[in-house]
Image (tube, rainbow, N blue to C red; front, side, top):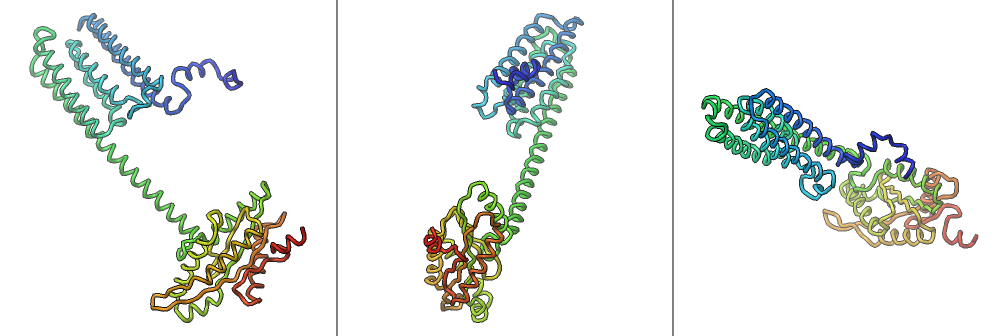
Length: 388
């Protein structure tokens, strides 16, 4: 026996044995227990009626046995987990149908005290208001009318001999109809309210997701924005401290982009930025993160990548951009090139410092004539290999 089992008190162990430790099962069995408690109160009321001499004790005893058997069967089905394979694991509809049948039987055998069946019926239907769908509740309405109609007929023409005044029987049926109809109406209103709240919750979640997307996505290119990349850099820095895997950072800047804007307008410039983003995404791996840093500058984060692999990837990106002219809406094309500054994260270095070194390498690539990849300091693959 483990320490947790030893630490649990006897009442807790008894409670676990009765209603399990599974939260879903506990809820179902707790609701079943509440229904059983209400049924026991009804049984006690019927026995008081019998003790007062208003009805015969024998039918009440048989009725009690039937009620208790139904409760035990429902508890056993839920406690064993057998009901979990059905659409309604809590057996709500089954319990209500059985309870209405027991209630109608009590209406028959209670004699002059049969009026107590009406509040009991209202309590039974209260569970249906919260636990059944509108279609099921309409079914319960039809079923309840049929069962109590049969019970009223039995009282009038068979049990007990002589029945009851027709006016009183009619009054009871009117109240039964009122209870059934009002419960069905309340169920439908409750269901409509739940559906409205569910839709509002879904709409709110969608709105929150849109706000989150706007906060972390660049609207023009659809790429992550600076805020998102800064957070990824922070998280990657924490992962590197734990795992020590290599991390590369590259800053990419479109060459002569101002000339593209001046010649083809901002619409042409926007189209060039979108085409560039698509080209780069098609050339990198799914694990790499490309973000728009601002204007025509982009940042590429490559985690778990060696400088050799990074050099091949960035060379592929540079060549793909140069080989992918952008078609303009007004006709013609514009050719793009990209300058890239790359750096490798050193031990103890922050991602922000890494980005600054990549930015310095980018300026060096611009100074050397653009359309090239330049590595920061001693980070170039051939330099690392030479010093190894």
